[in-house]
Image (cartoon, rainbow, N blue to C red; front, side, top):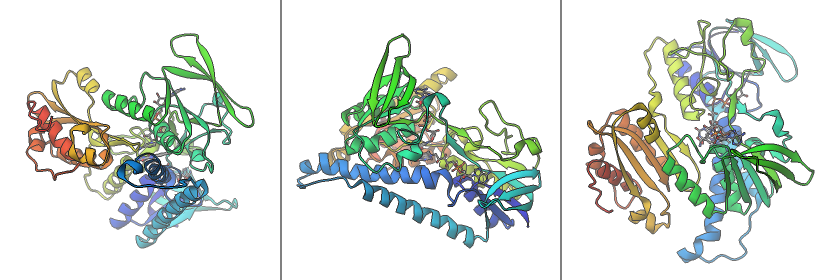
Length: 467
Ligand code: FAD
Ligand code: NAD
C-alpha cells in the first residue's frame, strides 16, 4: 500500500486532515487503533459530554423552573440508564457519520495501531496482533491526548475516575469530589450537580476556569454555587483513597498546613490532559518532543523530520477540537502546495455550563501585562429583555477595545447561549472590526446578541442604551 498522505489518529484533527487531503486529490489513508473513528471528541469528549449536559439541563429546568413558567409536572424522575443510552446513541450516530465521510472521500481506513518503522513506512498492528506496512510520502500525526492523572491519585477507574468513566455512570451519585476547577470539572460537575449530586470542587488556583476572564470566573462560580456546588479554592489534594463503597480525599489549604478529609461516592480527577505518543515509534525517526511530551513543530506544523507533520492535542496550543480541525485543514493545504494561515489569537474557548462561558482574544490581565492601552465596555444579562423573558439573567458581555484605534481585542461572555454568540465576535475580530462597528450593526430584538451590541456601545464611550 502506497499513499501520498497517511494520517495517524482519527479525532477531529486527523479525520478533517484526511478529508481535506482527499479533496485536494491526494491518495490518503487514516490509521485508527480504537474500534470507532472520531477520537476523544466524538467518543469520550465533546459530543457525549454535551449530550449529558443537555439531558441534565432539561431535568434541572423541569425540576426548578417549569413551575414558574406555569408548567406542572408530577413524579419527575431521572432514568440514568436511559440518559446514558441516549448519549451512547448520539455517539454512535456521530462516529458512523465519520465512517460515511471516509467512504465518500475514498479514504482508506486502516484499523490498528500505527507506529513508524522509518519516515516513509508505518506499521499497522491490528487487535489480533497481525501486522501490515504502509508506504507513505507524507504523514500527519494526530494521536491526540489522554487524561493526565499522576500516580499519587490512585486512579482505578471505579471510584477514582477521569472524564471517560464519568460519562458512563449509571446512577445519580450522592456526592462527588471534583479535583480541578477547569473546563471538564465544571462541565461534568454540572451534569451531576443538576441531577442532584452534591459537588465539591478542589482547585489549586484562586479561581475556577483560571485561564479565562476573571469576571466570567466569578459569575460562573456564583451560578454554580446556586446549583449547590461547594468550592475549595487555593487547595490541593494530598491523598485519594478508594475505601470500597466510597472515596476519601485528603485536602490541604495551599498556603497553610491545614488538612481535612472529604468523603464521596466518586472522585473525578480533571486536572488537564497530556499529549499521547505511546508506542508511536517517534524515536525510530528522531522526531523531538518538548518537556510536556508534545511533538515539536515549526510554523507549518512540520516536525524536525521533513514530511512528518503533527496537529491537534499532540502539539502545543489549546486542546480544543476546533483548533485541531483548523490545523488539519492547514497541513493538508500546505502539503498540496497552498499557503494556508491560522490566526491562533482568534480561537474561541467555550465552557458549556449554564450559564455558558465563551471568549475570544485577549483578557484584561493579558492586555495589562503587554502594556496595551484598552477600554472596556460591559452589559449585564439582567438588563436584557430576552434574558428576563426566559429567566436566564445570570451573566454579562465584556468588550475590550484598543484605547486609540477602537479595534476589538477581546470579548468575554458569560450567560445563556454565549457558546453560539461568540461566533459574531470572532468574525468581527477576523475582519479587525472596531467596537463602533459592532455598535452600529443592527441586532435582532429580542435576542441575547443585543448584549454584545450594548457592551460595544458601552466600550465606545458609555453609550449603552438599556443600562
Ligand atoms: P483525539 O480526538 O484525541 O484523537 C486522537 C485519535 O488518535 C484517537 O482516536 C486515538 O485512538 C488515535 N491514536 C492515538 N495513537 C494512535 C496510534 N499510534 N495509532 C492509531 N491511532 C492512534 N474540545 C472542544 O473544542 N469542545 C468541547 O466541547 C470539548 N469537550 C471535551 C469534553 C471532554 C470530556 C474531553 C475529554 C475533551 C473535550 N474537548 C473539547 C477536547 C477535544 O476532545 C480535543 O481537543 C480533541 O479531541 C483533540 O483532537 P485530536 O484529533 O488532536 O485528538
Ligand atoms: P483544564 O486545564 O481546563 O483545568 C484543569 C484545572 O485543574 C485547572 O483549573 C488547574 O488549575 C487545576 N489543577 C491542576 N492540578 C491540580 C491539582 N493537583 N489539584 C487541584 N487542581 C489542580 O483541564 P481539564 O478540565 O482536565 O480539561 C482538559 C482539556 O480538555 C482542556 O485543555 C480543555 O481545553 C479540553 N476540554 C475542552 C472543553 C470545551 O472546550 N468545552 C471541554 C472539556 C475539555
